[in-house]
Length: 189
Image 1 (cartoon, rainbow, N blue to C red):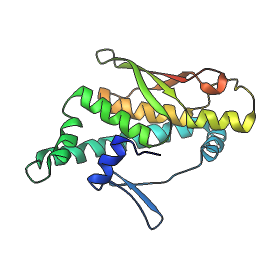
Image 2: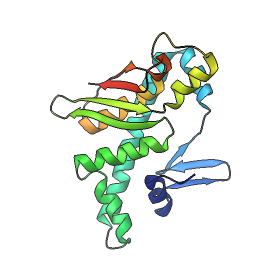
Image 3: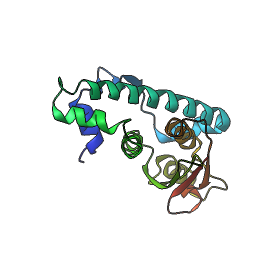
Image 4: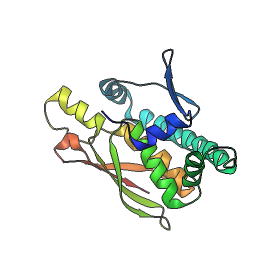
């Protein structure tokens, strides 16, 4: 299985590492959990999982962007590829969104696509193909869900877009693959 371009860049600039039982991504310790474990946590308290995911992703992304800006300022020291990564993150809206989309995809929640974004209204519509959480729900329940099940993903997206918009926003899952849809759809605003 080939590595994503974003993961290759992170490996190259030594910002992704799995060693001695620890995962480090952009200077932050990460933990891989089975999707069924995440589903179990959501069932305990969906609201707390959403809030924790939102706050954590906002904090982590803010730190990652600041970290990447340092690389941009040190482009004379680092080779051109590293400088390009620094330029892409935080210097333009398109670069920030593309990089955040790549980072999101590395987390394994699914493949994110920004369907619509309105910076003036601070709103976005996101589709998610191959949602790990929705697919795990379908696999363990063998039926269609009555309501969307991707609370953790919604929280992560709320945090990401709170950073992008420079204002706290919420995210609601409007459609979920676990309900028989071909993808998950999230509304942010």
